[in-house]
Image 1 (cartoon, rainbow, N blue to C red):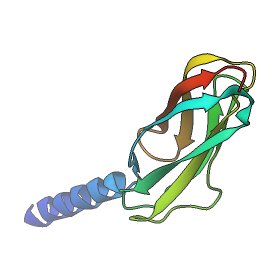
Image 2: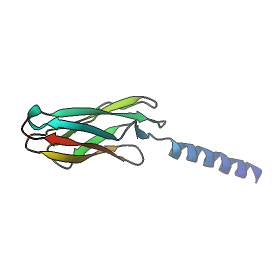
Image 3: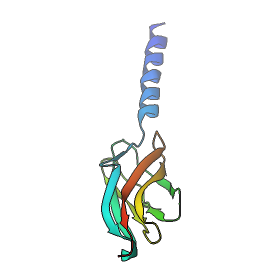
Image 4: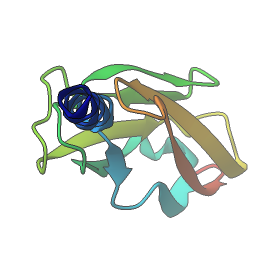
Length: 127
């Protein structure tokens, strides 16, 4: 009976370690404020640094924005545990005067699988 209990305990420890091992996407800052930008100044971009604080490689699957004015770009290569990746988000202010608040949803293989990044700012018309 004791052998069976030892076997069950060892199996439980292995199962917990297997299920616990996973990537974890941790942004250094999930928000970026562009401040005031000129409407005719062209597209602006920022970088979001994301650290894999898990213990398995982090894979970026996709990134989407609610409108065509915001374009995200995610890394194509897996990110090793402890390493940092950069997600680039650009915004086109042309024809969009006033304040903006846009969210980018990044899908990864981590749990939770969705990461929200936000850009904000104010477009100054006619400059």
